[in-house]
Amino acid sequence: PSGKITFHRIDRYISTFSLIRDLADLPTSDHLSYKHHLLMDLLYLYSMNTQDEIYTDVKDPIIQTAVSYIRNHAFEQISLKKLAEQSFLSQSQFSRRFFAAMGVTPMVYLTDIRIKKAQNLLIDSDYNLEEIAQQCSYQNGFYLSRVIKNRCNISPSEFRKTHRI
Image 1 (cartoon, rainbow, N blue to C red):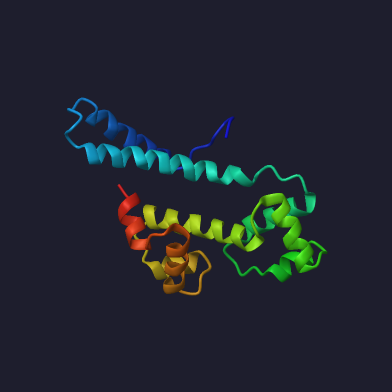
Image 2: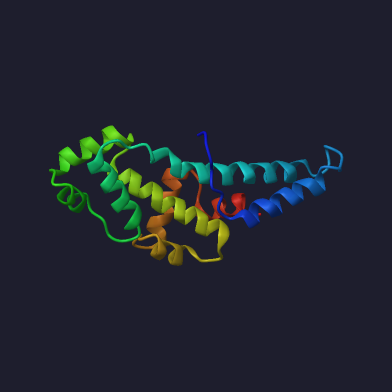
């Protein structure tokens, strides 16, 4: 994406940049895996910040309203039926229009938002999986673990170990 990007968690960027700066004077072979990890963390943070911008260019006003509703109520119980009723469309019409405008189904979009929050909580907090599942509107930690594993091809504990500094 081009244009202005707003970075969240600026303290994390600053600490990662300072660690990279401290390691810059060391020979390349020393701490190579740690340098790689720090660089990957910066790229991960950047991708998480730009991921929100993927879905911002929606021209269909009905779908814009639905997207706004999903974002504002993502961590509550949302059904396709409810979204379609609010849009005054049948479920199939709503799904087709949403997919045409967004490139994903409404439930995939909702899952993306919830998974992103779960990933951020895994990285930035010490909450256990049950607590994260509760905050992300999943039934339990086991179900959230299955969703993350299917979506990210990595277990939540591996995700936390890999992405945490």
